[in-house]
Image 1 (spheres, rainbow, N blue to C red):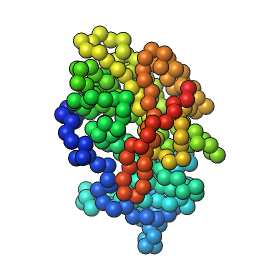
Image 2: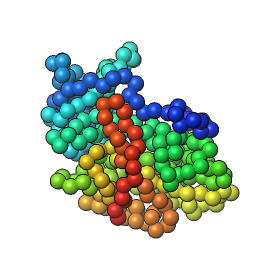
Image 3: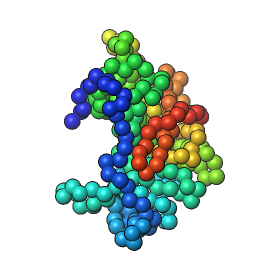
Image 4: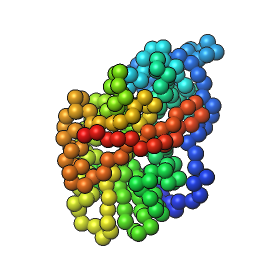
Length: 255
């Protein structure tokens, strides 16, 4: 169900700290998309849930340092969740894509996304558009204008460079979101509207982001079209460690 709209309280109330201390180990293998075997520093071999539907290119190599969060929920079959990895360059990578929206939401509540200022209400997972979509965040501002924000998590890094790409595989869902954001700007509305695609970089080795033309050329075409029609594209990276993940600073979006 959609989260209710909410008035923004004090920024000090918000955190993206992990619920429980993470356990360190070595990644043995990621397989069947949602499973990851990890050898903990204690010597125990565990299987963790891997909440990431992407290919995780460069993010799931055997031998990478892995950080998992334990979970005591009796309804869960797997008692650990793979949250972070560190590659051979000791770069931090957030692999739990379910966290992306929470990270962005905390940043919006704390005013850390400077392009999206004077927010008075946030609504999540609101139905919109022509293709039965749900926007990640619908913001209402002090002047009653609205901003539609779609969030994309970026972890794909070009080898031997600091360039990041989205998506990491052909994504019909990402195509749809480009079309829906364009529609936001063309349909009739009683209030001024903005449409924003926000790329959240959860990889400390990435310093700029580009559409992955070599992987999904249609997505790159739709991004170019959306940008020409007024959709805004923002990129923010994160500070990542074993205690928390928080938005850090804006990066360049290269088209």
